Image (cartoon, rainbow over all chains, first blue to last red; front, side, top):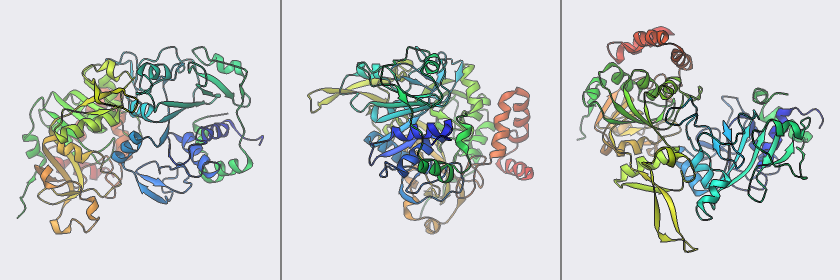
Length: 253
Length: 289
């Protein structure tokens, strides 16, 4: 499809993060992540389990941003149960980040010294438990050198260098699958798990991504273009999963 | 015969002391015991340690200068991701923080509820939680794993509470209580982690009517955990308390905007908080719409 917009490229790139996950809790946080997860389930990964955004597992393709959208409830998963699920490990979360380094160490707690922050952000939230217990991916709608930095101010989500320091036993459930941004998709498929450019979105050059990244991004000969949505995927995105175009407020262009 | 534990908000505040550690139930801007928080705001209490999946409870108490230390997994208003008054308190360094992974907070409350000193978890390993809060230690497992290694885990310390405050949809006069919404959150753990638990409720009903609106599965707080019961209709305002009512988003916005200037906060405080009692607050709120 040629008329897909950048937000829709991002949705498909998010969906691709969950390929192969089978029957586990697909738990993307944010608008484009939620649409992407639901798109994966509606197409190539039909056994994924997903929430209604609150305390239920919903079996149907719910649209985002529709307050009274009907949920086909398949299970009850209030917060105390959610922590059991995540410690049990059958979960793949997609979170955001305010800072990330080349090994995928993630910060959204605060900027500056934690003891007296320049800017208090979300706090550690669920990042420490998520990253050490099951697969994590990230969605970052504002790829910039201020976000991808040499050193994060506070490590909330565990990156590959710190996981390696913990040793193979403590880090055996740690996996950062991918980082999807408004410009590109990155992964950690390198010998020492440094971040690597995997694909660039149509219309974006490799140089643009490298310039928007504040550390040295590994660019090898495998870099491809992010795939565009199929006709069926575009129909699902536009008519079923996000009929009100809420995704366009997260990524423009 | 079941005991009668009915109290007023003022009776509850009379049980509190400066410097206490107080757990507050609910989650972000959801089913918070706000009438009890407002009673604390009207009191001279100070130097409190507040333990909470934080929302406007922590924000209001910080803005009013009641908080020495906050223990939290986050402080959020849901539709406004960052609690603006809490943000000010953190950035100005007026409040000490114990900032936890959300699951670590659960385990700290669970440990206190079970009267054990800590519970082991993988959450926190490899992160800066252990760097910035060195009081949280790790422990080596006494048991060898399949590969013979003794795994190192975070020993999440028990978070013991002097008092827990929670808000439930229905309760009887003895403190058997019911949540009718989608999530109990950690209210049961809060109640068991505390020496004394005071619960507010939308409506006190006879015990035999407790299963009239929800099945026995919703009766998750028993009177074993409860010291006192306050009937507080609309008591969670402006947080949500489904199915009784949703969040008052307009009021929440007005509250959040007061973080932008001391004048706005003072005006908000004198209109809504410096009132005689909860009944007057409800009259003022009712007159808004």
